[in-house]
Length: 181
Image 1: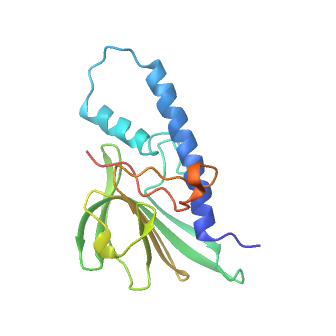
Image 2 (image 1 turned 120 degrees about the vertical axis):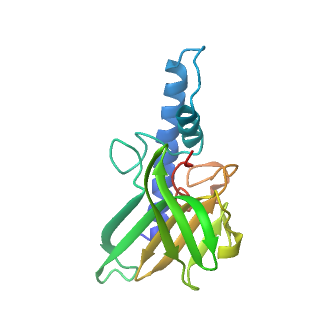
């Protein structure tokens, strides 16, 4: 049995949301009530609210991966293919090219320019979309392989409801990493 990219992303979304929520609750319970909030602390807090942040999800102790390459079974389940995952915040959009700032908090990996093919499957805030619907500042997740390109974007107000959550109407992956301050 093969597991689709969408199902893997949904499982990752649920796991990330649970870990992020637990980290946010634990962090707020441990914090003193009179603290000075720094710019990076505000960014980390926003990242936790968005379901992303340090110690959260796959990618090691520093948080979720902002860029990765995996060898996975193709959709047909008959051979292995390489899949590239990019997560971040949309810096700019020009035609079908989207530039993503791949970062966690105030630590930036790089800006990555990705040209989205016409055949890309795109969602924004849990709904089918086009490249033109994506906005600068949106959190974004791009998965590319020979099986196709999947793009999931969301603004700061979007609250995904993945498998196990209310409504079960969104099964995309977490839309990118935390906002870059």
